[in-house]
Image (cartoon, rainbow, N blue to C red; front, side):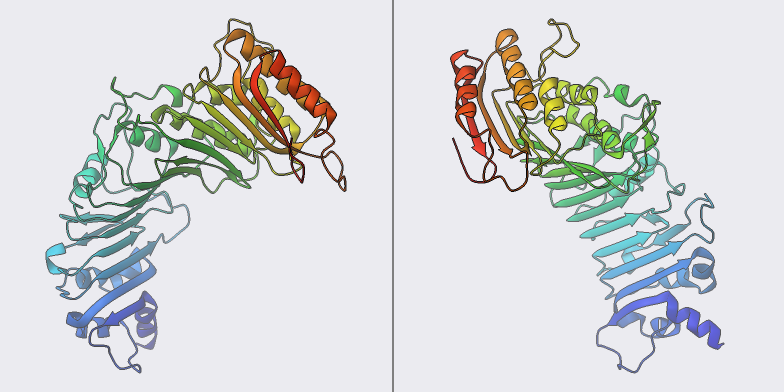
Length: 439
């Protein structure tokens, strides 16, 4: 019996009552059953489904709890990597009239109506098969008319290639949403998404195993509803991946939980995690015309062709901002700037990347004559085959530590900038010292 009581107490992680119970009361399932009418907050688990059933928790969850406002239930698989379908959890909202926050992890939620909830969090952290279809899940989610916050992790279910069902977040009141799922699901979600919450964050579960058919996923022949101007799209590279932040749209797409080891993408040879992250994230630009593109803290693991591919997907960009850490690798800036032109192994008649580009800013990166030459050649090519840049701003660091200022911010800088302007390759050139001086 003592062992059973210990198990029951471990199942109950947290509970609150109104009026409060005595501080000396040891909360277990029997206490919950006794004071169910005064229960306001209940957190159960983590526990296996076997323990969940053995402790008769399912019967507790279908009891009437008039004051329960917050419910959290976490189930874990009995063995790692079992691959069995998530168990189903039944919630009867009519018996929980005060419930406004529901968190279910490791189980498939069955609920006829979510209309009273303000916050819903559903997680499938073990990537197990779900006990509902995509359509069934959407039908349930559509009842969440009062939701203000939504969290979904690997919970949408498998979406078929021919699935044309629009994905409706709970409308009107929903303010924030976090959705973490496969690349395929997120891509299709964006293709059908209507009226997204004001603050939406999408996260790709896996960077490895990106399908080769990713580029040709069907869009049903319709213009994606999210094709609206985006003020700025920022590719921010971090230690284990990258994220795409859309300012003005207030949405963010990230690669999460990437391994630092090389992974396979699109059936090709192994690539760096940053390369894979960029390949995945750039696909989402099809849904968001971007006027300003910012690339921050990129690494040398991304090759020239991948930068070409990115810029092809941003035809509306008018401003490009390349932001590197001080003393960052010049090769990154060189590759991006080269991708703006077609003088690197491409025919002159190749399509011009970012045809509406007017302004380029480069900040960080160590000065080198070679880098400056590449920037100048790119500006020349665009002036000859498209239109001259309106402005070019460079903020460069010195080549050697301890130098008082960048040697490029000197007479050589003035001569170089003046030539670009005299030759009408750039309307205005500004060279700034990364430390002190400005010209």
